[in-house]
Length: 95
Image 1 (tube, rainbow, N blue to C red):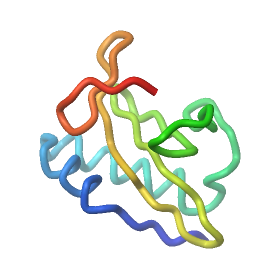
Image 2: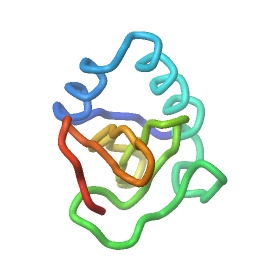
Image 3: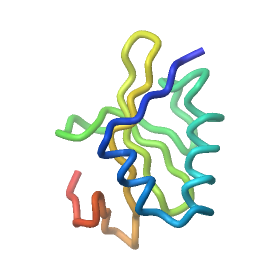
């Protein structure tokens, strides 16, 4: 079982969300990333090399970006996808 850790930026992202949405994201992270975070699924995929993270988890319109080391999953950022635009920390982000 993997240990899940959030960076301060990811905690800020969660804090800026509505409580209902934040609970959905946390529940998805716990259920999807605690056992096989590097197994690609319909909602989980490995990203092309970028400056943010190696993996992405889709939770409805939200995107959870994370890295995996040994037995730890580090949540780097949580973004909002609107159409073909991604917003992280309230700013438009290009992967």
